[in-house]
Image (cartoon, rainbow, N blue to C red; front, side, top):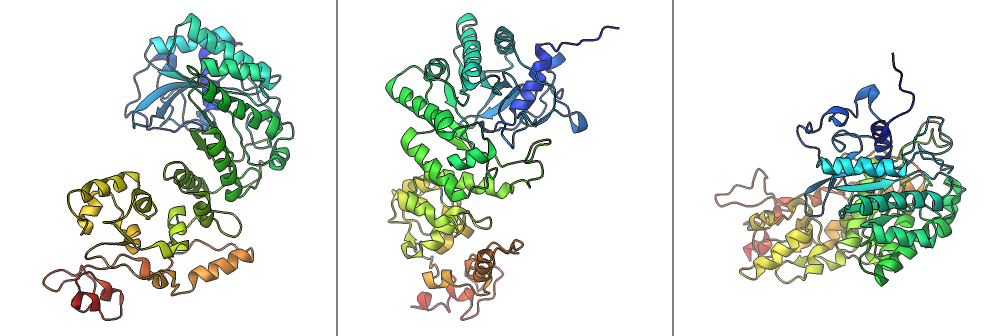
Length: 475
């Protein structure tokens, strides 16, 4: 019986492709319904499931070992070969499953071996691009050099001109960063934590300024000064690993977007890994990751100013898990509301909860033909009525006053703030709304019906649009 003792390149692809999935720098797309277009060692499902499933893999995103379905800005999907050059790593990152603390067998590709594997997958139409990461074997410069030489083989020997996302290892030299910039379509350096003292706590061998921020600044300079190379860079944090606040993360993100024009920042939450010093540290709530992406969207897409986003943080520097940042900002800035939908600029529309870039554009387009005067049209444009109604005004829509919006009828918000200030953790409220005044109003219909709501003077029903007992309507 023949016993194979040395893994071939397909075994390495399955192992190192699974380990690369712990890198969240790509946005995931859904797998095909069948996902069985490949055969043999590349058959879908060979990633495994249950006890045999490769670590950090997700069959919905990884239809085959080393193949990852990434989403493009236009909504289409692209298959990338996502793999680590090696999972050897000399770093002592206290949270990382590839760190020196983890006792397991390690693997590494040879340069030609990895380049030929990618070329084969590309020729078989299995992948359209490459995402190449690595552990740090030796030092950042040597590891980056091996990765750059691999990409050179793919570009020159195999003639590939498509998308390559290349990781730059912490501590890489300026010369190698320049070579990586010439060869890659996009580069990235993982920042992991916002402040140098936090980096020293979770990874004593790394110097945040020298090993990470300096290479990011070099990439920015090369992108601005030269043409024909990488078109931008991205980075990611490990949220919660260093017990940083959301405000500290935002301040670093704002600096990177402002100074270096980053394409994206990613916020994977900390998850404990076995055998690491942080094995017993509890995982970060998934809601925090979601709120950070919403905050990032406000900064990057909605162009909110820093002083506006600062309103979203509580006294401890964290985003609310109960309300999205845009709603919190609106509640803290009620003097700017309500906004007249028939006169508002695009920037003003984007400040309204429940209205995004697409629905704001539709409102502006429809205003050229007719005035905005009913919720049915607004909802068809994509406006979320239950979130937007307290902040907008148009014919037939009468929002509550700022004093009513600030009213906490049951004292829930003040009780929670007092408990948080005292360090007491409370369970989530039964409702995310501060008070019943935030619920959508009933609508008066011809014939005396109120959409199931009994309209009583002095209650919420007294504000119904067109209601005969509403003083504004009666006048």
